[in-house]
Length: 173
Image (cartoon, rainbow, N blue to C red):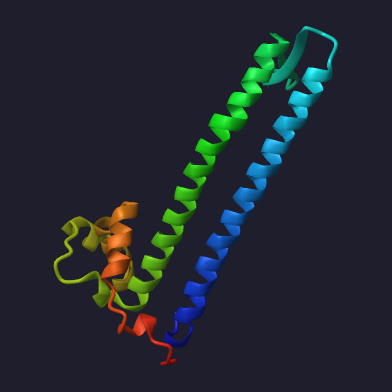
């Protein structure tokens, strides 16, 4: 990575994360809308028991094995409501944390690859990891992965960067 394109690299990393966040929001909205549509279909049905089939695996001859379950109308609506109001938000939060954590990790790896001195002298990694590293850059990344693990550590590391650091400089070098 050349000195002049670290800003572009960081921009692309954060742009990709932002796009992934918007995609997750769109998927959540589409999922909620489909849950809502199914509840409307279920409520408009004249049947009190609704049969639902879903795949559970394959037979040895590669044909699909289906499981059929009958639900009372109210039970099925309750399951869809549980999915829409409990599972969907929880999964959305997990996806949010995962995307932000991956972005922070990518940003830190990019900064450490370009400015290895940002790791600091007090960081320590097992000697075996240093000996297994193929290049000095690999050793830097192993030190980054070992000493800056967890979202809180990543945030702490990023806040420890000096605003006068070359990483934050607007001048191309």
